Length: 231
Image 1 (cartoon, one colour):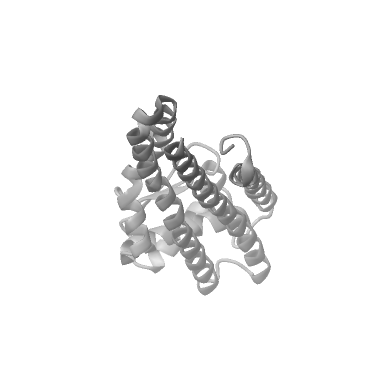
Image 2 (cartoon, helix red, strand yellow; image 1 turned 120 degrees about the vertical axis):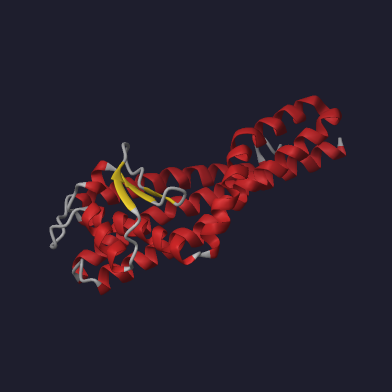
C-alpha cells in the first residue's frame, strides 16, 4: 500500500513531477536570459570579481569549472567556480548566477550560521543519500530481523532531509545579497534586474523541490516502518 499506492505514494509522484518541472524551468529561464546581453558588458567572472573586491574579499579565487550550471563556491579552498556559460559570458543570466555565488562567499566571510550548519552536515547527508535507502530496503526484505536496518536507514536519511531544508535559507539569502549588490554597485539596469530575479527565482524552485521530495520520502519510510511493526 505504501510502496505503490496511497496518499504518500501519490505525493511522492507529485514531488517528482514538480522536480522535473523545476529543472525544466531553471534551464529554460537561464537559456532565455543567456541570450540577453548585459549593458555593462562584464562577464560573469568580472561581475563576481567586482562584487568580491567591493566587499574586501581579495583572497577568493575565481576559476572556470566544466559542466552546465555547475557553479558553486567552495569554502574549504575559498574558490568561486563558474561554469563556461557563466564565467566568460556577458549575459544577464551569467551576471545573476555569478553574483549569487559571490553571495555565498560573503556568507562564508560573515560566518552565516545556516551556511556553517549546511557545511557541517554535508558528510552525513552524503552517507545518507548513498546508504540510507539501501539499508532501509534490505531491512524491509529481511522482515522482523531487519527492523534495526530500517531504523538505521531512516536515521541516515534524516541527514539528507536536514541538508535540503537548511539549503533553502542559504540559497535564498545568497540571491538576496546578489540582487542588493548588483543594484548598489550599478552593475545592472532595472530591466536587467528583472531577468536576474527570474533566473535566481527559477533556480530556487529546484531547492524547494529537493526539500519537498526528501520530506515526502521520509514520511513514506516512516509509514512503511510503522506498518512493518504491526505485521
